[in-house]
Length: 246
Length: 148
Image 1: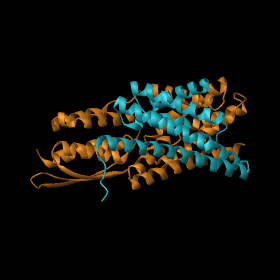
Image 2: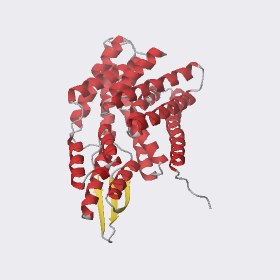
Image 3: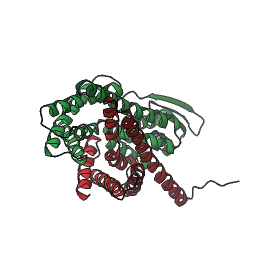
Image 4: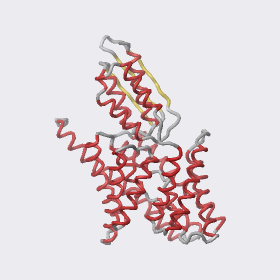
C-alpha cells in the first residue's frame, strides 16, 4: 500500500471534520487513528484553518501533506459519522474507506424548508422562554425565518462571519422595532433576545473551551477570539439600529 | 419551572435541527437543553448568584452530555452544543448594548460584566466536568503517567 494514499485518505477525513465543526484535537485524533490502522507512523498538527501531517512507513518512506481549510459550516451529523467510521476503520480496505468518506461528505443536510421552519420555531421558542407572549412568538418566528433567508443567500458570498452577523443583527433589530412601532408586539427585548439566540456563538464558545482543555492552545484561543468578536459584532449591529430608531 | 424547561427543550430541539443533529441524538440533546435550563431556573429561584447558577447548569449539562455521548457512541459536542445554546447569554449582549445606547453607563457596565461572568461560568463548568471525565477515562484504561 502506498504511503501517500494512506496519508491522503487520513487528511481528507480530517478536512471534512474540520469543515463541519469538529474540534481540532478530534481532527488530529482522526488523522492519527486512520494512519495507525494502516501501519503508518504519523504526526499531525491541526489548527482551525488547516491540517499538517507527515507520515513514515515501516520501510522508511516519508511523506508529508498540508491541507488548507477555507470554508467552515456546521453539520454535527457529519462529525458524528466520521468519528464513527474512524473508530473501526481497520475493518475497511483503504479504497472502501475513501468511498465511504466521499459518501458522507456529499450527504444532504436537512432540507432548506425544514431549516426555515427550525429557525422560525427556535427563535419563537426562545422568545417565549425570555418572557414573550403569543404575539411575540409569532412575530419573532417571522423575523427568525427572515434571518435564515438572509444568512442562506448571504452564504453564497465569501464574506467574514463578523460582517454577516453584524448585518443580520441590525436587520432583526430593525424589524423588531418596526413591529413594536406598529403595536404588534409589547415585549421588544424578549423579541430581540429570542431572535439573537439564532446568531450567538454557542458552538464556537464550546469548541474553544474543549480545545483549550485538550491542550490545543492555538486553536482554542483563535476560536475564543472568534466567539468574542461575533458577540461584539452582534452588539454593534443591534446597537447601531437601536441608537438610530429609539 | 417545568413549563419553562419544556420550552427550553423545544427550543433546543429546533436548534439541533439548525446544527444538523439527526435521529436519536437530537431527542437526547434536547432533553439536555431542558435539564440545563431547569437547573439554571431552580438555582435562581433558590437565590443563588447568577454566575454560580450558570456554572451549576453547565456542570449538570456536561455530565449529562458526557454520559449520553458514551451511551450513543457519538462525540460529546453533538450533545453539548445544542444543550448549551439556551444558556448562552444572548440577552446579556443585547441589554449591554441597549443600556449603552440609552447612555446608562452604570447598568451597561453591570450587564457587560454579568455577561462576561456568565460566559466564563459556562466555560468553567465544561472544563470542570470534562477534566474529571478524562481522569476517570485514564484510570479505567490504565493510562496513568508514572511519576519519577
